[in-house]
Length: 156
Image (tube, rainbow, N blue to C red; front, side, top):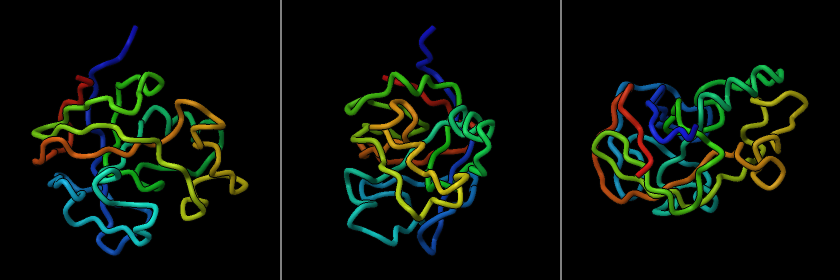
């Protein structure tokens, strides 16, 4: 069964930049990114094609079962969702969350800033090339607005 509907589990920001990102009840999403969230390395993070970062609760839980000390927000995602089949996502997929429409642009390549989330420093565990369907996703903003915890997430 394909999973096209899900739910926001956590909304995560870090006003100082970097990781981890900490849970908040709601966020405002603008074309240039999530209000109140800062990226320290603008060469690789942020900007219109990387305005929002998404990750799957099911993937995080599976990684925990493998022994990784990962947790919600620890790898820098702004929106943690559950119920969406992560393996069917592609660049160009449109996702509706609350008032917001996002378009997936590309997978988010892991870097050493998230090393503490992985045993033996193996952050390449969520590298798309090595483990298809396990990466975080970057998205651009099609329609700005507010997203709340527990909002419905749907693939359009």
